[in-house]
Length: 249
Image (cartoon, rainbow, N blue to C red):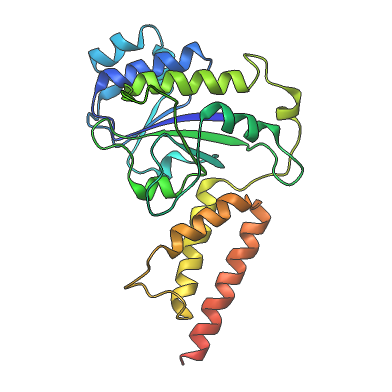
């Protein structure tokens, strides 16, 4: 199962190194940085020092400009942020959520790829990014002081995820062949196509979209469509666009 840690707009180089170290001690090495403050952050002295020997994780890490570029192969997104007040994915403790996620079932098998998203040290995560996620992970902390350093949060999530996977021996139930689930990039592409179609048939007003598309994003996250189902939905969107075009001639 692919496991990826994604740091969004990280402002402190030391936290990148600390995150790499936290990942390595738990056996993970997929690190992606989205628009970090320092373009050369992976080579900065503070980063390398805080990595404390996890240089292979830094060497493998990628830097991208947008979150979309970081989600290839990922079908389940976990935000490490508070759920927005208006609406959004459910909030769960990591241990509770990981247990449910890996238990699986015929209608909801374990995902092929999981990503953990961590926001900027200064601003956290944007609501728009949280809306795309399946869950908000809330680390239980002392009610009077819940502020966690970024690298410490990565360490806690990495530990809980490794424990849920059975330590360092992946359970056979997780590696068994399961129904394929479309990755985040395929879902995003389909939603873009569907949005065009909804505008064309006058169901969606682009001047006042409200929260229609984020709500549909949440719906498809819960549904976990297969690549074939995504293909069908794009066919529906294409037919809607063609029909709308004929009607307006």
